[in-house]
Image 1: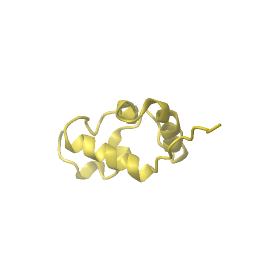
Image 2: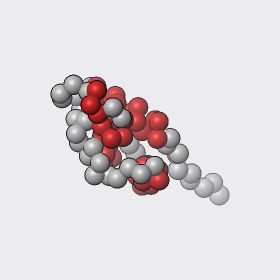
Image 3: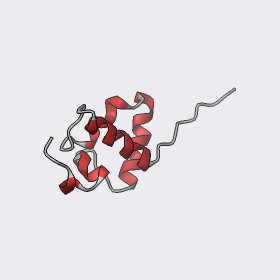
Image 4: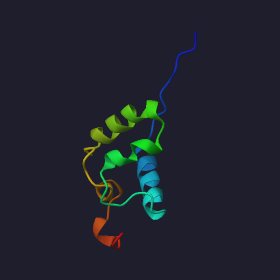
Length: 76
């Protein structure tokens, strides 16, 4: 019987998706990291959240903490 495997999301891929959503105006850089949840498959979010926490990111941290260089961004 086949087993389901969760997709592994590298932090870099999560950061890239966050950058894309911010650049498109879908999310603000000040929004909490948890606001990324609707943009990933629901069954994968737990693994994504765990990976972020392993990298010392908290769901309530702003997206600019995740993507870095908060001070380089213009006002949204």
